[in-house]
Figure 1 (cartoon, rainbow, N blue to C red):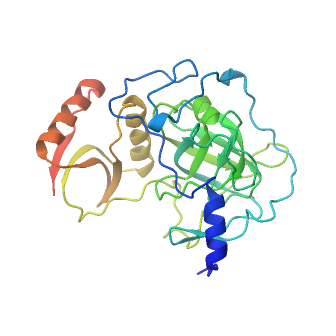
Figure 2: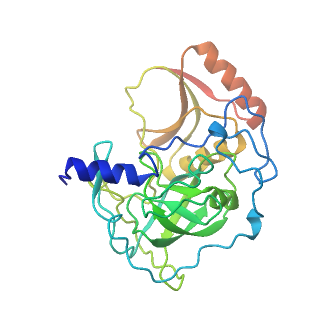
Length: 300
């Protein structure tokens, strides 16, 4: 395991995500009314982390154009955040992964990224724990098929259930600004913009327990206690993750965590935990009304 010095750890942690290594997920407040994504409808974002007062025409902002650039002198060194060691790649090579992407916007606009560049929420950029800085990647929203090309110039996110933080405009173009997160595929790009990914690459040290086609949320413990709502059960992990992304997309107001629980040969989507069964039933009724889905109440 890497043994970074305290000074190096502190410096890299501070540089990793502008002013701090931890970003809150940009989710809606539960009381905010549902809105269609787009610059003309500000408000309703997590801690007002939405578009500015006079955003540009987001649909006309071009994708990042891959080009040959020297690696940053410091941003690609091993570092540690929250007790976990990360070893950035020096060459993106054959990198591809699937997982949940979030975004960051106005709260961080104008602050320094890990590369020392100023974060611009209206530029096609992204933060990743281990991809080289700078490098380029194609990101595809698996729920709707939309793709963008981004330039990686920042570190993060440092959550076990997320693989990339995109700029506000990149998330807008992918269609998940209001939902806060989406299941995506990240593929490294060569200098000429062609895909070079051929296999899943590790994200951090230590490596994952076993190779998997999807880098997605860790299953909740089968010993976890509380009141949950089960939204479905799937025999294929990808299908569970796709449905999870769909629920967050359709229920933009939903802030409660949806975890994938591996139980036997099935992957179960479970929402919660809730404080009481009455709280869970009220949520179940709202979900059934808006999504035409009747969750199953579980008490463990």
